[in-house]
Length: 142
Image (cartoon, rainbow, N blue to C red):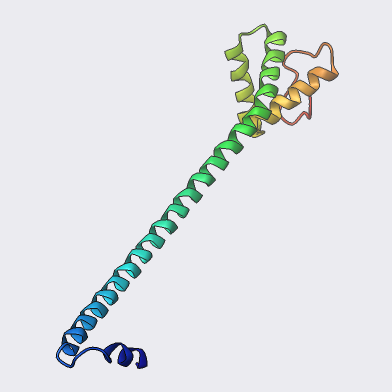
């Protein structure tokens, strides 16, 4: 308050009420601006949190898609090799070899990539495997 009295020392008493009114109006404007600023800040923080959540969901989706692609890159070559082995053994086209792989997988409950890996492993150990020798429950034989 001393600064107010010092500022008012050179002002005649007739203008003091006008200055007081102006200060009151300025204070009210300042408080209204502070409230608006607080509301804008809260809104901006809410938008930021929403963006973080969306970005997090997108990142998780990206990571899942990347994981699936990476898994395919490791399994597809083995599956293609197994199809080649079956095509050579049975003299069948690619789509029929793929059907054979799928039916072996379904019939045994063994994942397709694992069935393919067993076929490739068996073919690499044996130069002349017997056609149709792989049966469910018979181990690594194809």
